[in-house]
Length: 94
Picture (cartoon, rainbow, N blue to C red):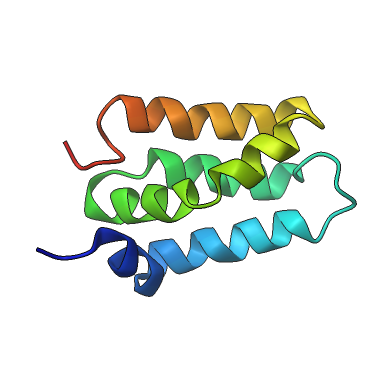
């Protein structure tokens, strides 16, 4: 059985998710910039295995996104979208 988290860390969608989280963290601690949020939204909505790998990688930073959500509506929106995608079974590949 493969470890999907390690797959996500090494796959381009997971690496892109990591870059976007890093870009969001470089800010002033306020809202996630609109450009970064738009890209996160596209990753969360991506179909197939590539989308799954992106969501798995983003899920590792869900505590950070929720922490940012306390600071603004945009981060809350991004964190909530990731949770909802996971609840639909996309996060676990169902």
